[in-house]
Length: 48
Image 1 (cartoon, rainbow, N blue to C red):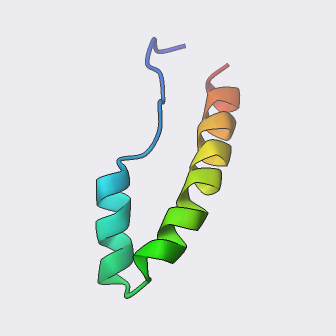
Image 2: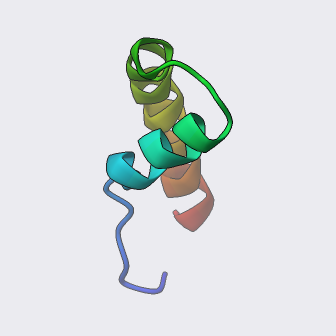
């Protein structure tokens, strides 16, 4: 274990990336939190 902890994504950057890809902010606001939760959980599992 490296001693680092993943808390989550930089949502500002994620929203900007979505905007650059022409994805509506409302859609991103609905989809990103559950995707982020899975990513954080899976990353924590891999570090354990």
